[in-house]
Length: 509
Image (tube, rainbow, N blue to C red; front, side, top):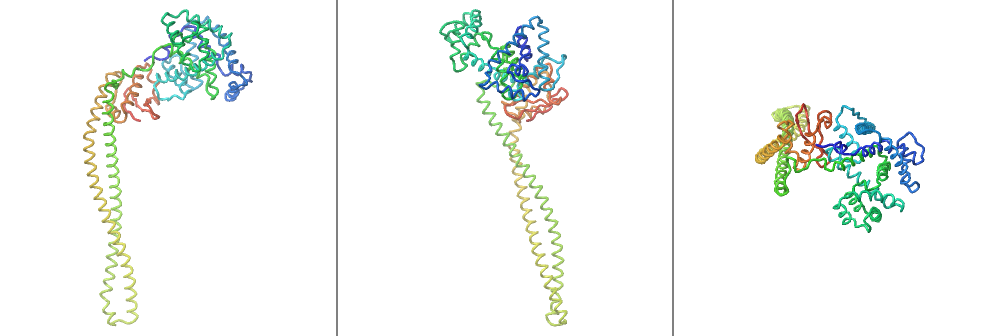
């Protein structure tokens, strides 16, 4: 899969010189000098001072022109440098920015892919782009973010042009119009319809526009070199200071934007080439089947939860039953003991009723009877409660066992269909992935987990990530902790793919 350096290779020597000059001149120090504020040591203080640049007190465009002069002088200094040296200088500049932002050190021995991967991540973080996206999609997101800001600033510059500015920049556009083919000239006339067909006519037309549509069309037809655009680029980079962002990251974004435009093609893989791509004419049917399949998986999950819950309740009920049984046995022994004492007293009552005992003995006897009778009443009540609870828990346990049997039968019925579909889909995915990602090895379980956990759309995201890895010359750069690969799947949580000793062993959310 192509990386950013494939676009950089297509840049001319002068374009490389320009980019190196951006790294060397578009920085906080020069911005502070040009705004007339004292250069101070703390980044936040400098940024806060520079924020005033965007107020009405200090028009930003005036300062940009001074930085632009520095840029032009630096480009001239690089004129004697050969292309090979320029390429080395550019890579070193990129690595300096990466090191300053992330602390990561990239050596000369490291691959261009590693440098490209790191620079894209630095630039993407500056725009808050999802960190789990593929590198190629991050490039596209960066390109869009930077392009939108740049075009807006270029439009603003054109709208504020003086007559002198128009005359100067019209010469640049006249040159590009003169070099354009007849078909391009016809498209310019048809799409823009300037009053006069020359550089001045086009610029005056663009100056009147309230949105960027015509400007974007002009750039598309004539190229960015038809405009004096460096001031707009510098402004775009310095605007990051409004949010205390990194200018150096924006210089990287500019390089990514320019390299991507130069490459002329999308870096990410065409989804039509992915293993799980569904042709448009089959998509509706496939989505309907997917819906039924997902519903079946939910049923399997639901019935499994019910079975597990039921089994847990049975275990708890068994424990409670055993606890009550022990207490009931203790109460039963106590009940028998008190009942015997009461019965023994009952056997002697005739002697006391018929006055065969002394008055003191009779009085003592009836005291014992009352005491034991009260104790027997208490024990009888407790014994009855334990017995009732024992029967209640036994009944509950019987009902739960019956429910468990019913749910297990339902689980068997649901799973008989569900497992068959999982196996079919797992087998189909294996047949797609194995030849497509022929360099990789997969554990058997990974296909089953993939079709159970991820939807068709999510699998497409995963396949795109695997494609990026498959075509990588330096796969290690994508591994977290030397074993985990994170893949964006459309939401906040990524897919996590485990890679151990050259084998994909697991996949999860």
